[in-house]
Image 1 (tube, one colour):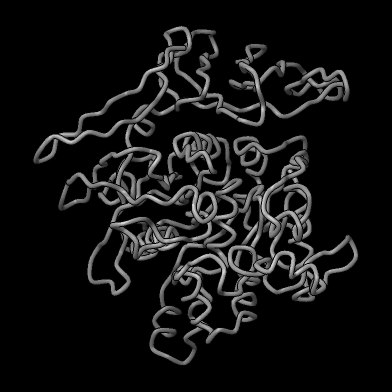
Image 2 (tube, rainbow, N blue to C red):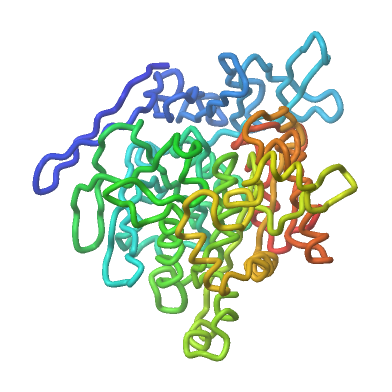
Length: 486
C-alpha cells in the first residue's frame, strides 16, 4: 500500500489549491484509491483476476494492521480489522472475524463488506453555499463529498432517477471521506432501490486544525473557489459543530444545523413531479458517535419544512396551507452510538427503576445537567439555532419534545459498545456508563415521557464502536418503510 497526499489543482479564473490526503493502492491491491487511514484490499472477479480496490476503514478503537479476507469470492470481498482473523462461523459457516483473547476466549464480529472505491468521489471535495436566513441569497460554504459530483449542478441523465439520498455525518475524527465510502457500500448492498439511484453526501465540518484550504463551489451558473466554514474544535467543549454551534469568523452567523437545513431544503425544493429530483422518495440523515449526537439534536430542533410537522406549527395560516399542498420525500434520521443525548425534560434515570428529577445536592454538583446540549434549557452552551427552535413555541420546551416524538427517528446501538466512559458530569453523572446503556436509557425515557412507544431502536449484534459495521448491520432497518421498535 502506497500512502500519498494527493494535491489537486483546480483552475478557475485563477489557480486555487485544495489538499486532500488519500492512499493510492498498489497494483496488487487493485490500483484504486482509499481514504487516508484505510487499508486497500483487492477486489477480485469471479475468475480470480484483480479488478478494483476496496477500502477497510480505520477504527481507533481496534489496534492492529487489519486483514483483507481471501477465503472465498462467494462472500464478496470482505475484511477484518486489527488482529482479527478471517474465519467461518462454527454455527452456520458464515464469514466472520475472530480474535483469540486470553481472558475472554474467542471474540467475534461481522466482517466488513467492501465495494469498489470511487476515485472520482473520494478525490473531490466541494463547497455548498448556505442559504441566508432571509432567503435573499447565499452566505458561507460548507465542505462536502458526494458520490455523484457537485450537487448544485444539474445532471439530466441521473438526477431524475435518484430515489434516495443519504446524508452521513462523520464522527469526531472529521473523516468524512471514510464515512462517504461506508455509505456508498451501504447504498450498493441495500435492496430497496437500484444502487445507481442512491446519492450519498458526506458533509465535512472542518476545524482550524485542518489548515487553510479552498474548495470549489460549482453550480450551473458559476464556478469559484471559496474558503469553507470551520468550527472551534476544543472550546467551550470538543467538537462544537455536533451541538449546533455557530461557525467561526467570518461565518459566525451560521450554525452547523443551518448547514444541514440548507442541504435538505435543496432537495425539498427540487422534488416532486416535473422537478429535478422528481422520483426522490426518501432522504436519510445518519450519523455515528459525534455524528450521532449531531443527528439526534438536529432532529430535535430543526425547523426545516421537510419535517411535515412544521405545517402544524403554523396551522390556520397561508404558510400551513402551502406546505400541506406540496409533496415532500420522506425524511428519516438515524442516531448511531452517540456519547450523549439531549433529554426532553429535567428527569433522569438515577437507577434502573427511577426516572425522576435529580435531588438538589446532585444538581448543585452539576448545575448544567439539563442545559443544552444535554437538555433543552437555555443558558448552557451558546447556540442561537436552538434558541430559535424553542422560541418558535414561545419558550414552551414541552412542545419541542412533543414535536420530536412524532418525527421519524431510529436509534442504533452496538451491543458491544460497552466502554465505560469518562468525561463531563453532564454525561457521566446523569446518562449512564456506556454508549449502549445511554442509548437504552434515553429510549426508555421517551416511553415514560409520552406514555407510548416513541421512535424505534435497533441493537446491532457483535458490534462495538464502529461506524461501518453499525450501518452495514442496519441496512434492512434503514431502508424499510416500517421500522420496528426494540
